[in-house]
Image 1 (cartoon, rainbow, N blue to C red):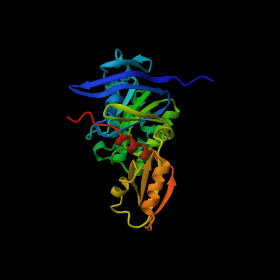
Image 2 (image 1 turned 90 degrees about the vertical axis):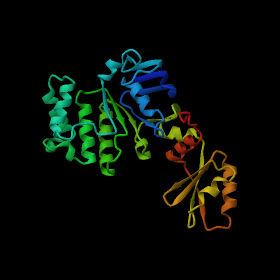
Image 3 (image 1 turned 30 degrees about the horizontal axis):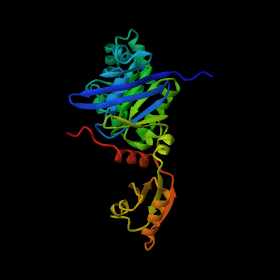
Length: 310
């Protein structure tokens, strides 16, 4: 059985802006057709990392390849094979959907641009709105148009920077169905997101904070790497209880989950004993639950240090 080829294979990638070391010694491998998610707080370096991997920004140091090309020396060639969708809608409001796509196709110098535009309109279900001005579209339809423009030149690698910010839940679901169809067709996708449900739709994940890769792997592997034991606290009177729970021996993380609280720690017996004693004379109940991806990420974030601050 042939192994899946690596589209991205880099080690020791660094980037500085002035005195800020924005990306520190990034090592990463991404397989062809993989949907790879980047997560982390705002300003963590994840967008800078993705841009370096895709030829949109040249690393200061390190080595590796993207699409078989050197990330330090051949960024221009890499960029021609990448589709890049920014968080902010960046097409032209006063042009129609079809006119926007035709303009992008001309910028790429596509020889058969009219056929490419027609194909994009059909594939993204935009044909029925081809004459509608982009500025009058809802967030979900703008997102669809932006994706169509990224796919015009048939990229091998798709870069999506928080692509579903500001769109409704149905549009988000539809968008992810399209992403999985592209993945099945062999297109590799790098996507940054803040949504945990979207992170769980990725084949593998990387969590970056303050320029450092803290964890990577499948969602299950990232959760398992934190070695957390979690209890769910339920009942009336939870309001204001989180801070008191944080003081318990063995409690490393307390987070709200709907009408419950999740209390997590790595020392199972110690935390369980603390919680049982704390809840003994209350009407609250506790139940052992599997730690979630959100539990793992909050725990990772608590253990990271802001090195960008001053």
